[in-house]
Image (cartoon, rainbow, N blue to C red):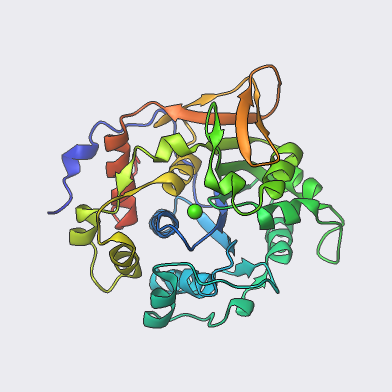
Length: 322
Ligand SMILES: [Ca+2]
């Protein structure tokens, strides 16, 4: 099966897309238990190939020993071996992934060991310090341990600004896959570090858009289309094969990517006029009484149609109107 162009003829956006210079992405991923992180990173590379964004760096928030090397191998495959990767240094490691070890062993990479990664907080601070004001979009698709540590960071030799001050000055928006809306309990928020979620959501100084579990749960990608379209030499193909043999998988993480590049609300509507409140156990609800710069996404386009866009970007097919 090959991709059919007419599928996309209905996708016309009302505002022009941002250029790669205008859309600078910092991607924070738990590249381990689920495979949607691989799909999300593949989408970012396709969009970078077509100059829709610049991928500044990747924070790997995972205790899987092969997660950084797997991420680096994906970057190598897509021709961007220079992308810096940050990790939480010195933590106990626990191999939990169905695919990271194989990808790290079967594909070339610069990073060989977990500790080869940069310090995550240092990398957050360095990349933001080097960026123009209000230019960076942070996309988080995992738990928020490193993100919270960055927010808590104090002035250092990189910058006289604290983490919060850097976020306020440098970040345009935080696109966060996490939580359930209007209420519920979702893994990125509660496992394994709900305290970092509480801190991050309460202390984030700028705009944040949440993509909840319910959004990506209805969008199934990575099935037979990906199997048949991608070359078997692709680590994306290999990861989805190892994960569930192309049975199809929910697209939680990919939603936050698609939102970041189509922030003109092509695919979803934004709910504003309230704030996300996270409890100590990581459950969350939307408090309509509060005011904040929080928002969450609700479906506007049929999940099956969004799945076609995501599948296309995951296998390297691109249209300007995406
Ligand atoms: Ca994830």
